[in-house]
Image (cartoon, rainbow, N blue to C red):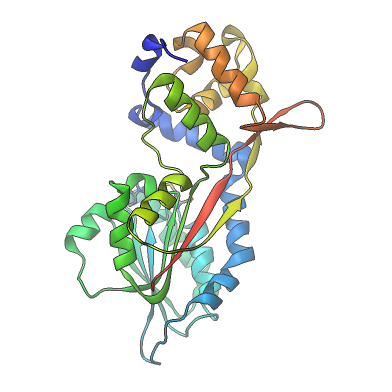
Length: 301
Ligand SMILES: C[S@@+](CC[C@H](N)C(=O)[O-])C[C@H]1O[C@@H](n2cnc3c(N)ncnc32)[C@H](O)[C@@H]1O
C-alpha cells in the first residue's frame, strides 16, 4: 500500500497539547485501564517481591524509584505491597514533573497513611531527564517502577541503560506500557506502514528489542488484558458522536482522524481496527478493542 501522501501531514495527538489528555482520559475511563493495572499489581506484586534477591542490613532502607507515578493510584499500591514483604523500612523516590499530580499523590499518601507506615517518600518534582542530570551516582534502587511513563523519558535505549544501571544486583525494574502484540501495537505498526509515519510512542516490542541490543536481561513479560468497547468509532464521519470521534483520535494517535483523512485510507484503517488483529466481538456485536498492556520485568544481574 502506498500513495497516502495527504495523510502524512496529519497532526499527531501528542502534539495537540491538552487535547491529548482529554483523549487519554476518555480512553482510560472506557477501558478501566488504571484499575486493570492496579489489579495486576495486586495479583503479582507479592511474586515479584519474592524474586528480589538483594540482601539488606537492618538499618538500610529498601529503595524504590517511581518514575512518573501521576496521582499515585498505582504506585502507592506498589508501596503498600512492598511494605511488610521486603523490608521494615522503605524509601520511595518519586519523580513526577507535574505539580498538580504530585499534590494528588501527596494527598493520597496522607489519606492512606495507615497502610503506608514505615514508607518514607522523597518527593522530587522533576522529569526523569532532570533526575539523570542531578542524581547522585551511588543512589541505587531495589525496585523501580515505570508505569505508562517510559514514553516520556526520551531515547529508549538510553533510558533503559540508565534505569538498569540504577538497580542493585538482584533488584527489579518493572515497565508497564502498550503491548506490541496488542491492538495498539498492531494498529500503529499498520499505520506506520501505510502512512509512513513514525509513531512517537513505544510498545513492549521496542523495549524488548532495545534490551536485546544492550544485553539487558528480561526476566518476564506479562500481558495485562485491557479491553474496551469502541463501536462508537465506526459511525460515518458526519454521524460520529463526540465520544466516538475522540476515541478514534486516541486509537489512531491522530487529531481529527475521521474528518481529515482521505475516505479510502480511513476505510482501510477502520477495517483493520475492527479486524481480529486488533479487536474481538462482544455478545451483541460490539467491537471490543484489545488495548493490552505489557509488564516487562527486568532483573539486575
Ligand atoms: C500517562 S501518565 C501515567 C501516570 C501513572 N503512572 C499511571 O499509570 O496512572 C504519565 C505520567 O508521566 C509523567 N511524566 C511526563 N513526562 C515525564 C518525564 N519526562 N519524566 C518523568 N515523568 C514524566 C506525567 O506527568 C504523568 O504523571
